[in-house]
Amino acid sequence: MIELRAVRKSYGSAIALDGLSMHVPEKAVYGLVGPAGSGKSSVMELLAGLSGPDEGEILVDGLREGSERRRWKRRIGYMPDFSGLYPEMRLSEYLEFFSACYDIPRARARQRIGILLDQVGLRGKEFQRLDGLSRGMRQKLSLARALLHDPKILVLDEPLKDLDPGNRYELRQILSELSSEGKTILLSSEMLTSISEICTDIGIIERGRMALEGKLSEVLRKIDASNPILILVEGSITKTMQILKQDPNVKSIGIREQELMILYEGSEGEEAELLRRLVSSGIMVRSFHRERGNLELLFLQLTGELRERRITGHEAESDLSKG
Image (cartoon, rainbow, N blue to C red; front, side, top):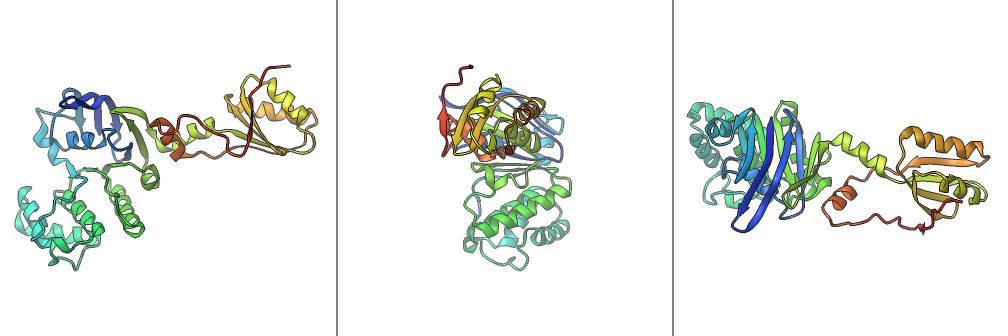
């Protein structure tokens, strides 16, 4: 549905996108996540047709940037990270104005506006001036504007930013409903946790490059596979340590009372074999499980804000020499 191939974009001497490639599947809810200045807004502006790439290729619904930009822009509803409201206008006037910009006939526009006001929860606010709207209402109105021409694709730049918990929940519910209607949704955020509940796919961007991209479920499985194994044993742990040190997949061991935490790089089958060896050696194993995946931790690691994992509360065992 959306494809960026080795896209580069600079503003003067500042490189915003550095050979970025990304893929947003049809009908996905794709979360583009990264810290401030990572290039998220540059991606959104390119997809909205506000500027073109310096290098690389962009396709939207099979249409190429440049030669087919007019048809492309009709397929996209863009919500920037600023409201762009005209303070003296009333809410209904604002939507009527943008309906005219999309060449929507007046009768059809009024019908469409009524549907959208219901959908975003602004029914009854038609005559309210825009300078009196709360942040949450402004975001809902901006979303309604992006939906006026009934686009197949929504490109939403920081739609949940600076919203209180109630408005964040309401907007996520609206986006979930739009997804169930078959819309493809691309939304950006600096906070992974704020959008992970509704995303089917994620891309983590850092310094204009894609650090990680994929189905959210697959990413979570990878996180689980990279997390430590917690082992709780009864009695002396000396024999347990000896067995663990003999396994080449065990890269480090942490100890806290009767609990051990190991960084293990083997497969699921090798994990099962390790547990079998422990039990067959007469060790009473009370529990043996992977620590649950932490999506936010992965985000911090990939964006360089957390350089190494620390096993909090465990004394690291640095000598894993065999024998």
